[in-house]
Length: 506
Image (cartoon, rainbow, N blue to C red; front, top):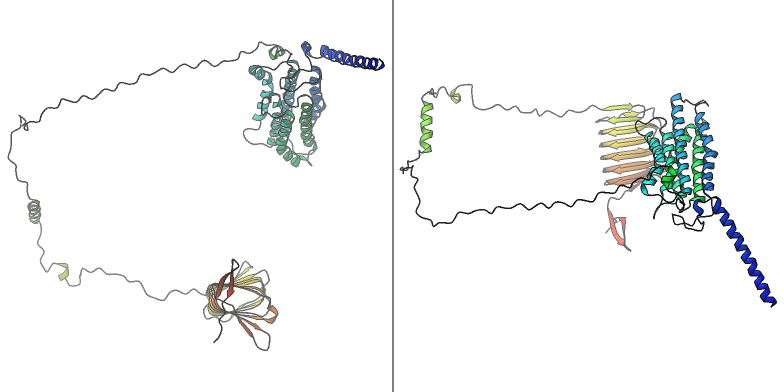
């Protein structure tokens, strides 16, 4: 009995708690929700609504406006007063764009009030409800059109931020959640806000305050949606209609007229061709108006030509043999032909000059063995072109030397910083008395390179060349080494290996 009594007492306590919860919910419904709608019902968007009064959602959005809009308007009003070059016309345009931003949010506040007080509207009702917001967004977008001005980034920033107000129409399967949509709009607007901050961060801080104020307000609206409209705009299923909220007659949905049945066009009648009745063929008929005539022989073309020739011949003067050109002394039928002169080709004179204090050019010398380049420096280069049977001496230190299309050339230099290149040449002797780092020989035949024993670290590269010898001087006897021009390539373990050809003596 004692156990049963204790169980009954516990059940009575639980019943009292449930009654208290029920009374609390009833009081909330009586005060806030129009028509006494139950808070346990499902919202129009499919998400369960919380026990939140209609005035709480509206006042929360109004708080977003009150906390940020004043600061934004104040920052827009003081632009250009901190030393930046800012005209009064630009000031008026910024204030106008900011007022447009404020009007858009005030229109959005009206939509938020309708969300908490109205049931889900029809499509025409929804269009009429959000039309003021759309007008503000269109006006902001029009400011970015036309010729680009210095306020383009400001107008584009406002236009991108106002796109976040479209969260009130994001319904249906596949639609983005309002908080996520608002944050994505803020990220799109950052492209223009970063340009504004970069331009006015130092010259006018009010631009920075204006940008940060707008961004803070948009992010505050995202936080508001996370609290009251997390998945989609939440309507009041037991509320009034949007038409009653707006105080106008419900718009009539325009129904599309039924499609008229296409008229059947009768197929055109094709007239069958009429063929005359076939009659048996008889003997050929003779036209009654034509009489038979015997065939006349056609004239012979040869006779016609003869007649024409005889007619022309009557008016021509006969030329005697003495009057013919071939029989007149001093005249002949041969046409004189002028022959081209076979003189020796012109030879260009040798040239040695310094171009723009950077490049030595030695060109077209032949048989000149006293070419000396003096007063050189490491920033200069030397280019030797089409010299034959000549000697070029380079004093001092230069950056690079190039020998191109030369024959029987001798090159003597001290030190080269970069490289020496010999291209398209033959019988060329290259001698270094100092240091040389790199030597390149390409398409040459018979190149001798003399280097001192202190420059044996030189890197020599050859391509399509033959007869290249490297001679090291400085010892008791010069050491001569030949650069291979024959190679053997074999496959070893699947890889092609190339080595110089070796010839064993008998």
